[in-house]
Length: 94
Image (cartoon, rainbow, N blue to C red):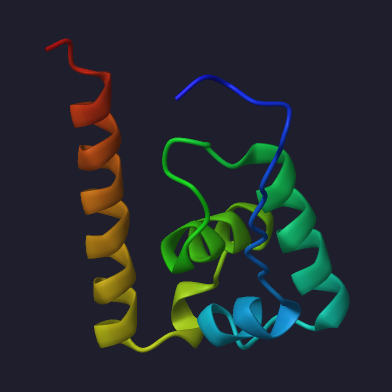
């Protein structure tokens, strides 16, 4: 099919409420800053998803481990490890 001059777009939206789902400790203005950060820094090959929201929030507003249950902190640490491993796999030549 030859390329035409017509265009078609989709728009996926994330909200401050979505940020608060992954980081309920953040207020509205902090959630806005997280969304701005995600928009400016996301990897187009990965896209934006719940994990990206959480990691971006953690970059801007590191969590204080003593305020988080050990089980929750372990879950988040496991996620961060898997995320780093996934990034390393993407960088490997085929």
